[in-house]
Each structure stands twice: as structure tokens, then as C-alpha cells.
Image 1: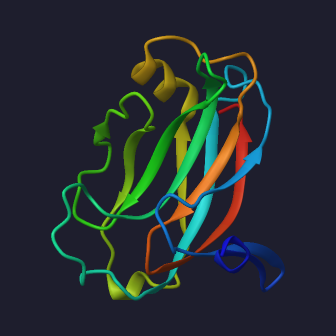
Image 2: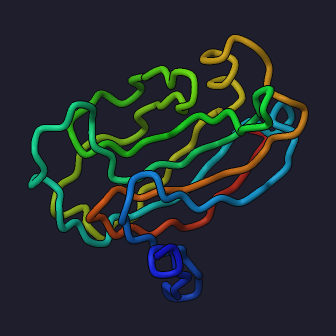
Length: 169
């Protein structure tokens, strides 16, 4: 199922990761080590390609996501990555809203909220200070080497992820 959910496609001169949301728990992960204090900024591009379930789901207990980028800057005592989940929310949640993750879940921050038909096929760029977000949420500095990045797309969603970059500022 994962092989069909994540494929690399050409978009003009660039390659993009096309994701087809099957299960909100099925993430693709890339182990990427970097110094998050020296390179705190994470940027990425994403675009909604198709949305077969948007607006047709029953009222959810928690906000439904279109997609999310997990930035893991540390691990816990069991060497499980500690992540901040940057979410494109389906509903009209306020950008910047923080939801604590609990014992096993990632804390999440809404970075984009809602969608409109004209936005399908349009690229959106996001920029977060993952280091500051980690300190604010977890109340301590992350590890000297980040753990990695993972991506997920919500059920019934087809979405492209463009370049993901780490920067000093």
C-alpha cells in the first residue's frame, strides 16, 4: 500500500513527491541529521492535487488534516522521535493554533487552514522555526543532531510535496 501512496513524479523541470492519503497514520520518513540550533528554519512547498473526501466527512472529534510535515529534533528515552507536526487543516482552524501531543503523539501547529477550489493545483510555501517551536512546546533544547522529517497526507487527499530545505535564517 505504501508504494502506491508515495511516488516521485515530474513537474516540469523538478521532481515532486506525490502522496495519496490512505490512512492518516501512514507516514513516509527520511532520516536527516542536522544541527537544529545552527539551522533552525525548515521550509517546504506543497500543493493540493485532488480532494475526494474534503467537506464530505462526518463532523470529526478533532480537526481533519489535508497533510502534515513532522519535524523530529530529538528522541525520547525509548529512542522514539519527538516531533512537531505542522498541519494543513481542512477546517477553518486558526493558523498558529497549538495542540499538545500527549505521551505518544506529536504536538501540532496549524500552518495552513482550509482550502478553496481555485487553490487546487497551486503551490504554497511554508516556513517555520522548528528550533523555537520545539523549545516553546517541549520546554528544553532539542538534541544537537535532529532526527529527521516525515510526511503524511489525509485520507482521500492527493497532494504533492516539493522541495524541503533546512536553513540558518
